[in-house]
Length: 364
Image (cartoon, rainbow, N blue to C red):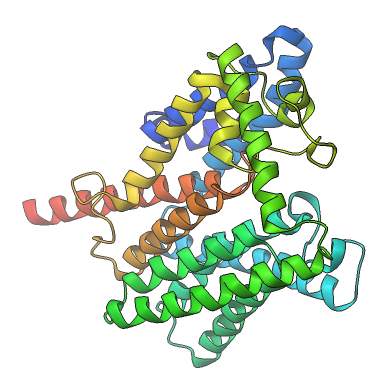
């Protein structure tokens, strides 16, 4: 509270952003969605969700120049690479966190699928940071980071992670000067990489959990989600309660009990209903619009400051990659979307300041 008051007008400006309004609405619906369990459950849920809003405010408030934006991105990349290298280390030394020999770290990145979220988040920033530095050494370090991210996805044996990585590469190379050639190379890589990941995952599971099994399990979970929406259309069955109640809405095989919906959008709809889904979609829409729209209020990559444009491009590319990743796993509580939302609003703020400075200069 002291921090936000100290920021004064800055906090007020953030509050008026449509991204902020949509985020607050989404978090509020998550809290209200467990109303049937009483006030204590709502308070507990508020305690789990409010930190994302504070995180969002602090990130935006601390980015007041392009240099601060770049420094914040470096902080994200360096901390993210710690997670990436830990996952690789866990596989190499057969640590317990590498469950089944698949790369994973700890906390929200312990699961091999969740582990790839960090990689998809930071990968475009690593690529774009290469454009902002003239140091050959730093470029080599960033290249090593990028290759390690690719290795991390392969070592995770995550099918959804590999699809998201391929999508990220596609989005990244579509922005290059030789986009046609690079897109063709990505297509060739995609065929080999996805095929490799499917085969290695089947081998890793010793034939006990094939792609067909995975497909069948997701259909079970999605049918359960459909029943939840039918019976609780407005607010769903309660935030973060899909894994607990799925078996009550559809016949879930033993191995799938206790699992999430394996699709972020499906789980949002099932757990927070139409109200939460609409708020979530608006949150995504306004986050993306800030860095992807071509018209006023967006003008993606159109800042006069070249570094700022490069950072905006990285935000857009990372955002698209995370949206694809969210199709194959459910992590509404992952930090990625909230970090990218903060970055997109910070970009709008800096772009507005740039325009204001130009207007003042032009007037006199």
